[in-house]
Structure formats: C-alpha cells, structure tokens
Amino acid sequence: MSTQQAAVTTRSIETPSGRVSYNEAGSGPVALFVHGVVMNKHIWHRQLAGLSDIRRCIAFDLMGMGYTEVPAEADLRPGAQVAMLAEFLDTLGGETIDIVANDSGGAVAQLFAARYPRRVRTLLLTNCDASTDCPPKALGPLIEDARRGTAADRPCSAPGRAAPAC
Image (cartoon, rainbow, N blue to C red; front, top):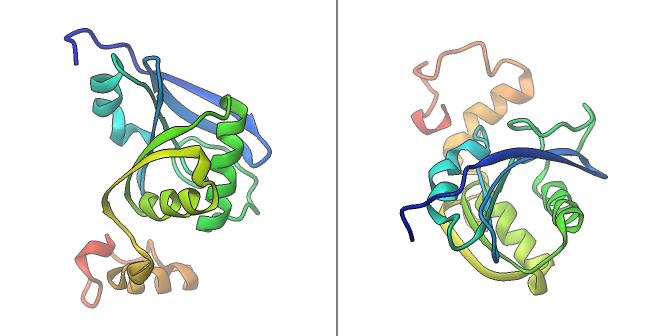
C-alpha cells in the first residue's frame, strides 16, 4: 500500500429492494465489505482508506441498518439481504468481487457465496456467525425482548441478559 489514500465517498443507489447507501474508495478489482447487525458501513472506514490504492473498496449498509432506505414492511432476514446484495451489485455493474465480512454480515456473505458462487472470487470471514451458531445463543434474550417489543426497556446490564446481546 502506498502512503496516498483515496478519499472515502458516501453514495446511494436505487435497487428494487430500496435505496442502498454505501461508502466507496479507490479503483480496481472490487473488495466488498459486509457489516453485522447493529453496525453500519462506517466500521470499515479505515479498511477502505487503507486499501483504496489497490482496490475499489465498497462498504454498504444492510437493509434495516445505517442509511439504506427500505419500505417499512421489507423482509430483513438473511435471504432478503442476499437478494438485495445481488441487486446492489447488478446496479453497480455486476462484477466478480472479493468479500470481507464480520459478525452477522458473515452469514449474509456465506449465503451470497453459496447462491452466487460465480460472483465471488474470494471470501474472508472475520468473527462471523455460522450455520451452527446463527443467531448466537447469547442473543436469545434480546431477540425475545424484541419480539415482545420490550428490547429498549431494560439496560444491557439487567439481570438475565447476557452481555454480548448488548
């Protein structure tokens, strides 16, 4: 990597699933960065800036997180996120990509690679959910609170709530 880094630019693009917000820097082969739940594209800012001299780096916001705009009734499950990702890449130009993913974004990335193997050149997973642990058991209490509509009613340190769920 050189000492010169391209500026990271925030953009958005219309897809059939909604208006997808993303950050972009550099040129060349595409490296796509996928964040996890309760995060957004900005967690990848340093990676985009640091790799922009050798890659076209793109970090997008999953549906329901960050600045991606979707209808209120949108399906936000992993399969729908995969479909949105395919639409997003089709709209951008639909090339073969290298994917870097973390947390629950890893589940989306794995499903994308399984559904669209010809679109994925490489897949790098860091601290990700996997089929045997998706969602992680520690999130169980938070998921139940969300189903009841009470997830925001208790602080993360409340008795009975696992710390990783916060």
